[in-house]
Length: 284
Ligand SMILES: Nc1nc2c(c(=O)[nH]1)N[C@@H](CN(C=O)c1ccc(C(=O)N[C@@H](CCC(=O)O)C(=O)O)cc1)CN2
Image 1 (cartoon, protein in one colour):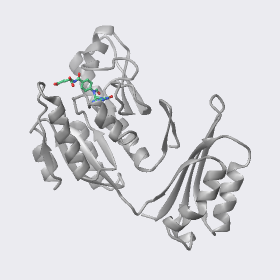
Image 2 (image 1 turned 90 degrees about the horizontal axis):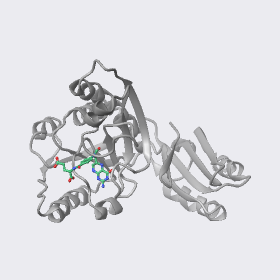
Image 3 (image 1 turned 180 degrees about the vertical axis):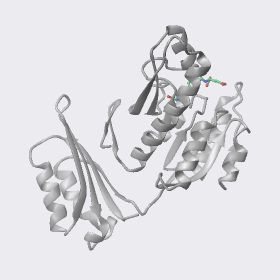
Image 4 (image 1 turned 30 degrees about the vertical axis):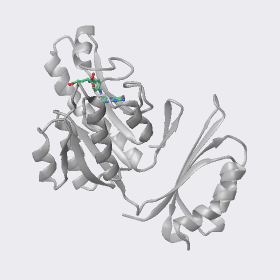
């Protein structure tokens, strides 16, 4: 896999940003292999994502960051320069449903996900054999309804010890406490098994069946304190009819959940997702 530097920018929109940044990169001898930008006309915010071939620059990522600082200040940028050789450390969290966990582990082993999956945390023992088959440490952290604070303190300790850059709730069926959501803001990704905002919360397929929907879906979103209300990264749907039972909906839904979570995680790992309030800009 080629070595890139990714420059990701969000700032107040104005004429000249693209010219200034692209000229800066050209002056350093940089080769831009992918360029994306978006101007949000409602909010006056500008978003940019450049991929630069690292070998085209005769400097380290740190040196490039230092050289870019004055431009970032000039345009009041929120920005990051990511070195793709620094692989992200990912922790997966799961409860009793295996399909998303198995799909992510397969894709990771196949090289589809450029990251290191460093541990699996679960409130049940069911998924241990799957994680350990892939050689990944498994941490069983039961959630005590009478003392959730202690349970999630243990979860947070595992995530901290793993030096996680990203946490994926792969059908983890416990609500994360505010402290954990704040500590890892913008780094926790969930797959909700409905086409949000419809059917947030528990048992969405049963809610959908009772409503008589003709479409079911899945939503990959960032986790916030408010349940299933975080910035949406990716969604998809599947057509259903009056012939289908709740079991059919769950079966159809599994395929949608796997695909949506995998796309959402891959785009996050590739720095293609920029959060803007409670929405996202996705340069897919
Ligand atoms: N702080 C957040 N935590 C979680 C989110 C979120 O958006 N913010 N998403 C959920 C995932 N989820 C649906 O996708 C979900 C999980 C769990 C529940 C729920 O009601 N859980 C009960 C316990 C259920 C059980 O014991 O089996 C609870 O936590 O009290 C609703 C929706 C993951 N976490």
